[in-house]
Each structure stands twice: as structure tokens, then as C-alpha cells.
Length: 96
Image (cartoon, rainbow, N blue to C red; front, top):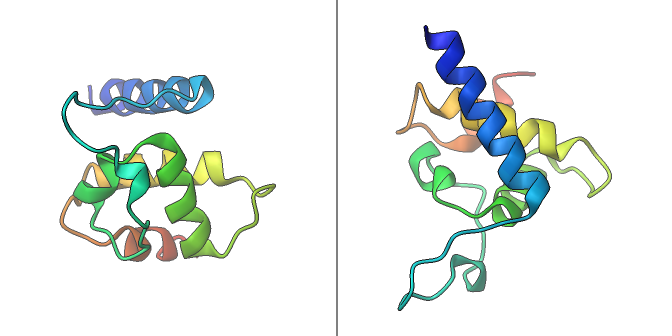
């Protein structure tokens, strides 16, 4: 059953990233106006819009826009499900 949940999460993240959509709540400033820090926890990372997630991942792995950051964003989201209190940087750098 966990695989179905994980696969569903990856599919949803992929669809959102490919569509380029982001959700904002009326009456609040969009998060894209704030600087993006690579020192976010996983729970903070999950509420970012897709563009900011890519920026965070690129900053952590020092990737250029042509690198496979979409895959890394999806991977970070899946790994963060199990450790919402851990920094995203720690989760991604453990993969090395």
C-alpha cells in the first residue's frame, strides 16, 4: 500500500511541475516574492510552488537549469514524506 501512496505522490508532483501551476491563497502574498533558501526543512519545502522547489534543489546540488532538477525535486518530495523535520539539503546530500 505505501508504494501506491508514494507513486500517487510522484504522479501528482510531476503533473504539477509539468503544468507549471502554482496555488495561491487569495489575500496572501505569493511565496515567489521571498528569497528561496536551501536551508529549508522538508515540511517547508513541500509548501513551495514548483518553481521555487526547483530553485532550492538547484541551489543545494549546485545544478544549472539544464540538469535533471525535475527528477531531484520529485525525489526530494518523496524522501521528505518520511522525514518532514529534516532539512531538504540533508535529505538530498545523503543520496551521494
